[in-house]
Image 1 (cartoon, rainbow, N blue to C red):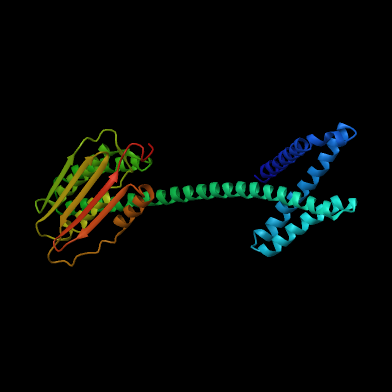
Image 2 (cartoon, helix red, strand yellow):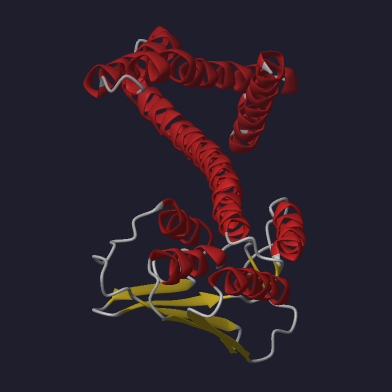
Length: 335
């Protein structure tokens, strides 16, 4: 990596040297008649090019890293002006004319300033690109971490459901185990993808509700309704299930009272309106629901759908409401 960077720096400076030399030749072409030969004219242009590049190299390789980047701006400014003046003095003082020194100084000041502007512009572009790459990498790492958290969290809740059925010695326990196996297969396969079909994700939610309905027996009424054309709309996997899990956990699962869970998924103009409403137990103090599931999904929404979602959560006396509006257009996520 260091060798490649060094080669790039050398090639870049060779290119800059050639470019400055060409510009000097072009700018002095009108006065070529003042020189005895074309070769002497070329030597004149070469001398000016070397002087210009020496100032630029001193600035780029010494003054900027050791003074400017360390925020010693005043000393940096003095040294830049001093180095330009020194080169101008050595170049023009032989003519015994301070006017020539001044003109040469102003010329080098202009060329150095132009070179500095190009240098800082290029460096700023590199820094922005590196920061964007770091931000992308950090985002991918955080998303992977959040997705990995969903797996054991969902499995833990599902195993609790099977455990409750086994305690009841329910004849449906083997079927529920098989159903959980299908749910886990989908979860493991979808976790490897950036997005899945919205249709498949809603089917997953529906199957999970069927599993919970068996465990909760007759003490919970569950309604799940889907409206609208799903088309080929896509969504980040396992994004909706935390809202459903919380409705079960903090509603029907936390009480022996009769309870309800109403879930609707409405698609309008490629926007998903996902609503979850569940009854709250009367004998248990309302929970603030700051568990892993909701905090996890909030963070994922902010990372993936920063300006493409609205999440509204309301906790009333006897009911808990969640309304998620989400842009699920095809262009939102890659496959």
